[in-house]
Amino acid sequence: MTAETRILAKPVQGGLDAWPALALERAVGANEPAWALEQRREAAEVAARLPFPDRRLELWRRTDFGTLALGELDPFVPGPQARNLDDLPAIVIARLAGEAANLGLLVQRNSDVVLEQTHPALAQQGVIVCSMERALREHAEKLQGRLGALIETDLDRYTALHQAMRAGGAFVWVPDGVQAGVPIRLIQWLDGAGVAGAPATVIVLGRGASATVLEECLSETADGPAFFSGGTEVFVGEDAKLVYGHLQDWGRNVIHYSNQRARIERGGELQWIQTFLGGRTTKTNSYFQLVGAGAKAYVHGFMFGDQRQHFDLHTLQKHLAEQTTSDLFIKCALKDRARSVYQGMIQVARGAQRTDAYQANRNLLLSDTARADSIPGLEILANDVRCTHGATVGTVDEEQMYYLMTRGLPRGDAQRLVVEGFFAPVLDRIPLESVREQLRGMIQAKIG
Image (tube, rainbow, N blue to C red; front, side):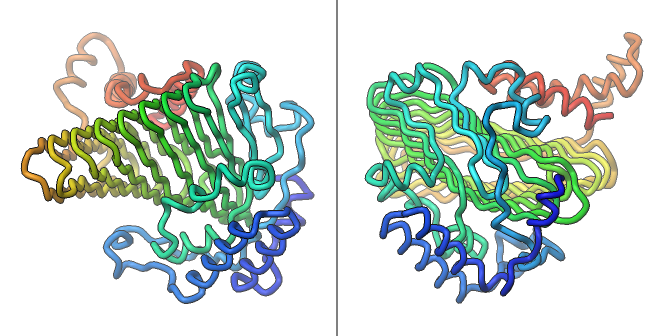
């Protein structure tokens, strides 16, 4: 953490109650349109009347943020603007692995987007990749009715605060019929302790469009808590196809809470990849609405926790039209005293006949002190459907270990191969080879 960041990362005068007013003042100065300012005001009113969630609520019964004191953090720490890639943190440069020239790229540092890089191929196609602030100034008509449309303001106080406080984030727009020529990467970075971030990201694919977008959360471990509150809304148009990856590798001081929503229209297809590796405590709600006939959502993800990490993922596959398909497969490996919570629901509305939905959660415990909670569920209001769900919790197969060890492998190497094989089906779906290799390296490091 730089000296500049240490000076700026301090509690805001007036504490948590002052946050919404200060955020509104900043938004007015940034020339946000009137409807976006009104959204902030309404969210601030909701936040003021809601308590913070606790274990009495079902979705929070197995997770809490412990001693996190939001009012002691600073959500307005500016990020130093980057003239080019060399001005970014070393970890970010390493993650880009020489691929920056073949990407659309946006990097946010603390509360500010510090680098926007639109690839010429994307610009020629009319693809927009820009900060949320710039989008609200230059493309407000494309955002109105989308920003804040899918995430429920009154879900809880954290969510309402995020909508009142949002700072930074990205806007991705792919016009009708356009196949985006290069991948798009969105990177969120937090500097050290005492910082809070609240970006809002909106991704829109027009009819018949296609794109690949990776959103990554990165930081180094620091002394003292930091908080990330994210919101991502995805709109997949008719017959469009989006590959979206959310890769979380925070430092061990970060508490992460995010809401992710996707809406898929008739004939649209969403490939969604989600990974949790870093952070102290992570809670994410990922909901998928299949609103048009023939819409498809394929959701694959993994969590790998060690030490005392805590991961909590809640998913909702919501089928609102006939002949829709969703396939969700989440894997989790845990060692030391790590814990995971997976809670999922498939909902099939009346009239959503010939729905085909699948939900599975597989958990691998690598120590006697690790714990995995898995709670899949179904709510079906149609009678011509195929819906299945399941969950397993187990340890490393000793027969597999014996087989590998009898062929000369030490026990640690044998366990590493088993765990890598466990995660392989998800890793193979990640679209960029360099990212796949980086994730494999992080998994190997966690195995030890």
